[in-house]
Each structure stands twice: as structure tokens, then as C-alpha cells.
Length: 280
Image 1 (tube, helix red, strand yellow):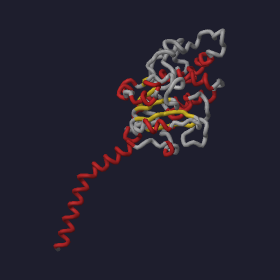
Image 2 (cartoon, rainbow, N blue to C red):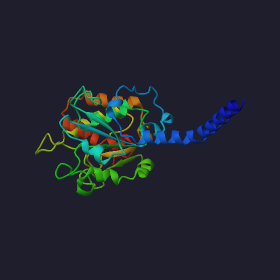
Image 3 (cartoon, rainbow, N blue to C red):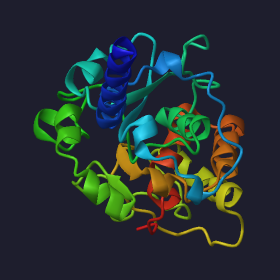
Image 4 (tube, helix red, strand yellow):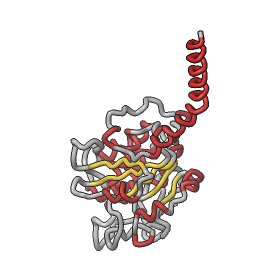
């Protein structure tokens, strides 16, 4: 009887300790999981959800609060991202290696193909903040368009106010307005007589607009935004468009018969509109 009583006391104490400390242990596990670096190799098998509703936004503790999306060539070294921005998870698409864990259907449209592929692959699983950036870190002239000290994307993201991204939905990572503002893209102006190829993205812009947005919204005569396809959006803003919308955008990019530079430039001056801003 005395032994059975002791066993009963020990079991009761163990039960109360478990009840008291299990929530803390669970919270610590979740926090460690959240802070762990994003490993792209663990993700490709994930099937995008079939729904397209904003209410299906996945809580940030599932996929982390911040993710960097990037397009890179197999030959480019982007180890600086993990080394200097460990709190950001990474979705880095290799555009010229179909066997890479994260890759694009083809290498076309510059960074646009990777950005759209991410939006399709992870629809409904977005984090709170998504930053779309280029693979080069810093320096002149390679990083001339990065509007931060030393043209450094590490500085750019460290200075990013994610609360403002949540409030605004879309934020261009470049504050300097030149080039891009107020009317870099003018789809209906005449070709440049000195360089007929100079404005080829403008000639194809109306076609892209009508394919993506339909005929109900008039093609703007002027589009202005700070260059150069580096921006941040909130996960909820990304969900303001349907999965089919992003698929349609990528389909246009895959099918259009125009060079890589021009097709990418079309999206360079369309991202802000896609994510809820006015053309100028």
C-alpha cells in the first residue's frame, strides 16, 4: 500500500509539471521553427491550395513572417542572403536549371518569371511580408538601382519598415523617382526615330494590359513608377488577386513573342498596378 501510494504521488506531480510547462515548451518549439532559415529544398513538393480567397490567409507562424523572393542564374552566388539576412526565409528560383528545387518553367522575362512562379507555387501560403529583389547584393554599377547605403540590398531590407508594408500593401524599394517617374512608360507615343527598338516594351504594353486586365479597364496613356522591379508586398495584398490571375500573367509571359528585356520591362511598370496602385 505504501509503495502504491508513493507511485500515485509521483505520477500526480509529473502530471502537474507537464500541464504547467507543456504550453511553454510548445511555444518555444514554434518560435524556433519560425526563426529557422527557409530551406528551399524542403518546399517544391508542396501543392498550391485550390482556393483563391483572402480569408484563407495562413497565419504567419506557419511559414514565417518574412520571405525573400529572387531569380538567379546557376552561376550567381547568392550566399550573402543567408549570411546577412538570416531572419528572412528564402525562395530563390534558379532560372536556367530545370532540376533545381525551385526553378522557373523557362528563362524569360528576367525576374518577372520567377516572381510570378513564386506567387503561383505558394498561393495561400504567403508570409506577412514578401520582398522581391535581385541576386546582386551591392556596388556600382551592378547595384546602382538599389536605393540604400552602398547600393546594398542588405541595408535596404534591414531598413524596410514591414509595418508600413502591411499598411500600404505595396512598397517600391527604391525611393528615388528617376528613372521611372512620372511617365516612363507611354504605350501610345510614337517610336523613337533615332532608335526604333528603344520603345518596344511600350508597343507590346497595350496587348499585355488587355490580356491581363481585360477590355473593361482602359489602357493608361502614361505609367510611372520608380524602377527597377525590387519591391515588397504584404501577403494579404498578394491574395487580393486570384491564383488564376497570376497564372494568366505568367501564361502571357510564356507565350509573348518578344525578347527577354522587353517582356520583363512590361512587368517592371505593371507590378505596382497589379498590387493595387494607380498607374502614376
